[in-house]
Length: 333
Ligand SMILES: C[S@@+](CC[C@H](N)C(=O)[O-])C[C@H]1O[C@@H](n2cnc3c(N)ncnc32)[C@H](O)[C@@H]1O
Image 1: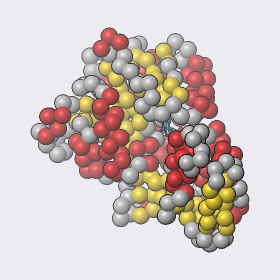
Image 2 (image 1 turned 135 degrees about the horizontal axis):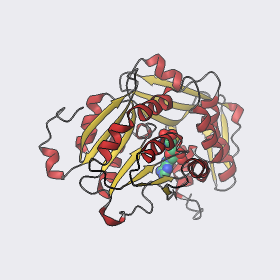
Image 3 (image 1 turned 180 degrees about the horizontal axis):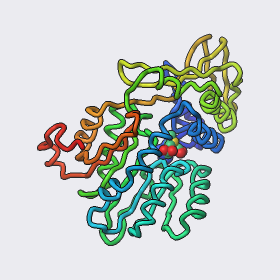
């Protein structure tokens, strides 16, 4: 790969992953325009309960969130990392807006397609709201708001679950390092539950998740001049109750060699060999408390949907020395 100085970081990560054993691809690579469109379809699938559950919590319990975000009614800035098309957040912002509270919204996403959909929807529904979209990586261009306003960072859709626990802990610490004491973090997190329900969310009979997964190969073909034959790979998803993780793979159906015209590389696949494409961690309430404590936050609210499938958790950034004094479970709502 040293002969390709012009490869962007994401392409380099994809190629590095394909050279590993077992092979893997970064889940961030999913979200080209077609990937974002397919994810919008996944969110509407009957088996993909995560979106509906998160929407229900936000729609019914937003007054508790608003109270936690601004107990004194002062203006605040809502920053959403990996906002996607923002359809759930639009409902939340519309509910806040009706109360007359002063806030602004900063959606951040690597997908211009997703942000385009978001901006159109917000402009139509809430033309008066200050929205400043940022296209790019989660932390690019992060700045403190003027007037000492409180920042509330949102990371929804169980996005955190796409990271192994160690990486999630490091990521939460990175978020904390950008925040001031008293700022807030709102997380949408999928809970451990019946493995059948979980598996169905990643293995829909409609085949949309399979198309989403295979689209990774289409993107590699287009952007890196590779010659993956999509019909020679299939989608495979599994869930292990032992570690609470759903995993997605692409399985090679034959012995085959894939080449890139853009870089001087080729990749051999044995029949049945996999590419690990995504993990989706599920959490217990105890794991959520521990993650908060490990990353400099005090958990303040733990809201669940009516069926107890999913949780929206609100944490407050606290002084590092306070973390040592936190009593486990004490701040659990
Ligand atoms: C699973 S979707 C969730 C979207 C939204 N949060 C929701 O709940 O519907 C993940 C989103 O994160 C974005 N994303 C993934 N990795 C990112 C990164 N490193 N920086 C910025 N956005 C990222 C993707 O483009 C995608 O829109």
